[in-house]
Amino acid sequence: MSFLLRRAVQGIATVFLMSIIVFILSRITGSPLDYLLSPLASEEEFAAVAADLGLDKPAVVQYFTFLGRALQGDLGRSVYFHELATSMIFDRLGATVSLASIAFILGAGLGVPAGVAAAVFRGTKVDAGARGMALFGQSVPSFFIGIVAIQIFSVNLGWLPVGGRHGLATYVLPAITLAAYVFAAILRLTRSSMIEVLSSDYITLAMIKGTPRWRVIWHHALRNALIPVITFSGLLLAQMLVGAIVVETVFAWPGLGRLAFMAAAQRDYPLLQAIVIFITVVFVLMSFIVDVIYTILDPRVRVSS
Amino acid sequence: MATEPSPPDGLRPEDPVPSDLEARKRKSVFARLFRGSGGVAVVILGLIVLSGILAPFLAPFEPEFGNLRESLLPPGSPAKDSSIPHLLGTDRFGRDVLSRVLYGSRVSLAVAAMAIAVAGILGTTIGIVAGYYGGVVDSILMRLADLVLAMPIILLALVLAVLVGPSFFNVVLILGAVLWAEYARQARAETLGIREREYVLLSRVAGISSIGIMVRHILPNILDTLLVLATLQVARVIIIEAALSFLGVGIPPPAPAWGLMVSEGRGLLNTSWWISVFPGIAITMTILTVNLIADRLKDILDPHGKVVG
Image (cartoon, rainbow over all chains, first blue to last red; front, side):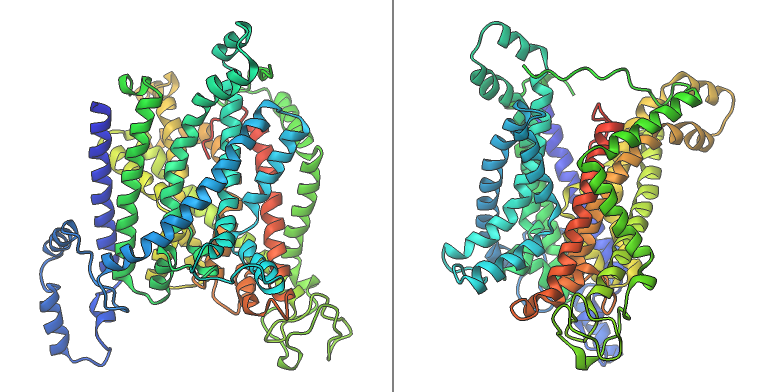
């Protein structure tokens, strides 16, 4: 238990660290007044707004005000949309989570078996084929897959919608585009981890004892080989919440990634900073969940480290 | 049972290496790198690099200026004031796509090389310092590294791009700032192991300063794995730069960055597919060959999987 407790404290420290970085970055690169007020505003107007926002107080006081509000769930207002940043984030979360989960299930569902097959048939054509697919999935930029897929399947063939989110059909192209990378990454990781496990003594022992080969592979070996894959998947899922910026932009998907991109394009720093803090919290929670799963899968963690 | 043949005891960097053995080892690295698909990849990547270096001699037209009267010409169209046709067509501004693709490899490779240098120097310094001194310095620096590693790179780059604005050198600095953490982690992990070795303790006894130990004894011993890490990162840097340029927060127009070119042709794919497709193929070929070579190098130089990247 002390292991999990320590990880929880570390996680909270991480969020605080990020809030400090975000705060400092926003201050060293210019006063928020520059984008809140028109350049033609008078000195008095600047002073009034500064006093109103508490910008005339020392930086440390400002940080704690910012932190206090953040702890109550108020991450500020978007400069461009004039809406609460948190409510904008939660509005978009559903679209992103549904797309990311479908893409993840698709990518991992194909990637794990392919990785196992590549490891079991190491050095054969099966392995070469799987590695080739992984290499390709990692090498074609998602924006290129995306626009070519739209051209072929939406414009030329007219089978699928061009973009947006209205109904199941709109999920197909963005999910496949996003899944390509997940598939490649999970395949490679499963393969290398499986190769390592398959060469360990206890697997050889299980084989000598006459356990059926399929059982050794899918039960004894895969269980251990999946541990690094699960760790990676947790982080991958957290990253996909915003890492899908490119895919969401290409397919006009109304998710968090597109929100982050719009915030960046409009230089909407408060919104961007809220997204960064939100993602940090998600990441910390995700790695904590991964740690919990870890302690269940690998009891050694509970004792050591 | 496919058990992995145990690799012969590899040369550890700290062992004294006879020079002929070193030479033989290097030769076999190249021989193994060139075998099969590795050789094809090396040749293709070599051509891409060459086309970047020789772009001023190879490109038939100016990459950043075009004749508006020749806009959106399909591949192979004759040019008005030149005997050389527009082999890959022209874009909306009448710029020659082939010339832009050739110059584009310059942009991609230059950004990648500079960004990796920035990230490598920054990350290695941070990692060695954290590993050598330990304690609070170590905790803070490594928390920071974890944080950077955890965040989606594109998001971090977007935030920084918003703060500093788009320009060639800003893109290099942004990429350096989001990619240093992997070097830091690797350098730290290895420094921890070397710090306790006898020769380091003896150097300390002999009165060599901490900086001297870090530069002369620790750095040379961890350089091998850091170089493997750097080659593994090349593809990622290129893909991130392309994505940033595609999104409009990377290399600013009118520079011929491949990602930017793909995005410029995005709305015209139906009528003028060549504007996006050729730079898209160029990015894909570059990343594919770099990935293939990096995979090979990792298999050869790091058979025990010391590098986590």
